[in-house]
Image 1: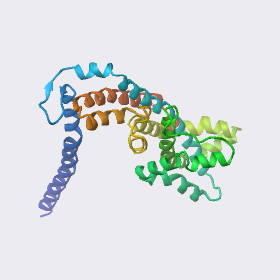
Image 2: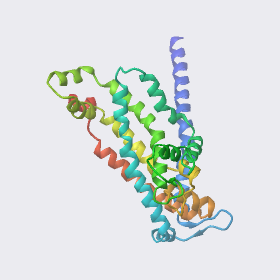
Image 3: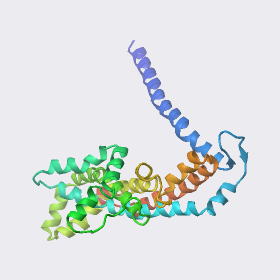
Image 4: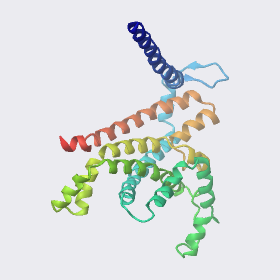
Length: 300
C-alpha cells in the first residue's frame, strides 16, 4: 500500500512539474519567440498589413543606413545611454546615506521611491506642465533671479532631450536606490569595521570595500538602466512625440512611428533588428566591466 501511495504521489508531482514547465514555455513561445522570429522575417519584406507582402531582401537595411532620420534617432539613443545610466549611479550615494541611522530616514526613502510607482503617463503630463514657459520651474527660476526669460524646455531642440532625460532619471533613482540598499545590507559589518580598524579613511572604505562588494548589484543596475535608456519610449511619446523637429526622436519612437504612423512594418522591423544588436552589445559590455566583485570574489 505505501508503495502505491508513493507511486501515485510521484505521478502527481511529475504532472504538476510538467504543467509548471510547459505553461510558461508555451506562453514565451507564443508572445516572445514567435513575434521575434516573425519580426526578423518581415524585416526582409515590404510589409504594410493591407497590401500583399513582397520579399525585397536587404533593401530595408540598405535604406535604413542611408536614412538621416535613422541616424538621428540612433544618435539620440546613444546620447541617452551616455547620460542617464552614469548619472543614475548617484543612487549608490543615496543608498549609502539612507543606510545610516539618520532622522527621517524612512520618510526620505519613501519620497525618493515615490516616482517609481507613479505611472509614466501621469509623471510625463506633470513634468510637461512644470516645463511650460509659465510653469512651475520657470516661475521658480525667475523668482530666484536665476533667469530673466522663460526657458522653452520642451520646444527648444537643443535642450528638449535633456529635459526628458531628467524625468527618466527622476523616475529611476528610487528603484536603483532600493537595490543598492539591499546590497549594502548584505555586506558583513565586520568587513567595514576591519577596514576602519586598519586605519582606512571613509573614502577608502567606500571605494576599496563597499564598491567592490556592490559590484553584482552595480552590474544588475547598470545593465537594466542601459537597456531602459536605449529602449526609452513612454516619457518621450507622452511629452513630445519625438519633436521638435525630431530632436527627441530616439530609436523607440523612430520604430513606433515607422510602424504605426507610416505603416512601414518591414522597415520598422529592420530598424528594430539592427538596434537589438546594439542593446545586446552594451549588455555584454556591462557583464565584461563588472564581471568580478561581490562577497565570493572578496573571500576568494
